[in-house]
Amino acid sequence: MYTMGELNVEHSEDQKFESKNLETIICEDKNSKKADKCTPQLDSKCMPNVCLEEDGKVNDFLEKGCSLFGCSHYRRRCHIRAPCCNEIYDCRHCHNEAKNGINVDQKDRHDMPRQEVSQVICSLCGTEQQVQQFCINCGVCMGKYFCATCKLFDDDISKKQYHCIGCGICRIGGSENFFHCYKCGCCHSILLKNSHPCIEGAMHHDCPVCFEYLFDSRNNVTVMPCGHTIHQNCLKEMRDHFQYACPLCSKSVCDMSKVWEKFDLEIAATPMPEPYQNKMVWILCNDCGKTSEVQFHVVAQKCLNCKSYNTRQTRG
Image 1: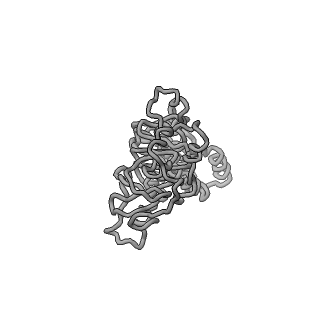
Image 2: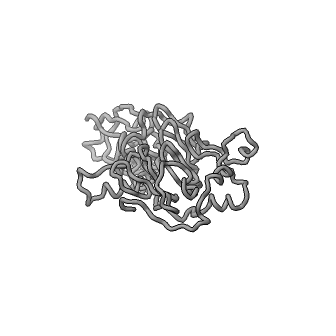
Image 3: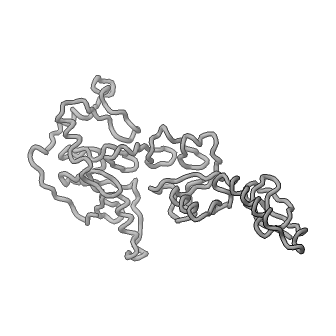
């Protein structure tokens, strides 16, 4: 975290960047032969085409300071000035953690509006400037991945960042591995394209376990068979504590057939006392939604439709 004010960093003359050198790095003409040697453009507003097959000095220049700056959230060569409080931070997450801490007065707590960021400070030369990928003073690339919409800089491109127009934010994992469902209002794995149950606003709510907002969470989110979403780690925590039902709708979150077989054996080995042997009750199945009248048992009641024991007694 950086306090309010400009960063003053000493730099030698050989670090200074002439405007004419920028022309050898940025390809202005996409139809030129030089443009064929450029890295592909990720989005119309993200990462300009950069020629990397120039001489070694250009490559060294683009890599200068790479991965040496940043915070626990991003590797980047710039800081941002928060438009909400005018203070300087490494990234919006650093700002949000600082401004929403337990020691901060509740009326002063707030999040940074990421798309309103307009000023960044180069980590190498300390020059404050408008949001752009290359420093106007020393010319250093402030982030190998850059999104002008989200004001996102990141040198760690192994995350395979991409900007989803439907979500309106940048996501990780590679655009070829995800698709945007406009009914759910979020991105899903391409493996679920023709099979996922659509739930309107599926990720526009808090995780049912930890209550963190899922849509822009930095933690992995998974879709349960019922269509509801949850943090992957939270689902694992549930399973570790033998909780196998969705916290929202109570449907089973995995194949429980082997467990139901054990229930069959336990019920067969546990006869009910004579007064309860002919007692009938109505149940509702949490898995298939069907109601049925079954014989009461103290262990569990089995759905006559899908053979699940994930049921609840409604009458009797």
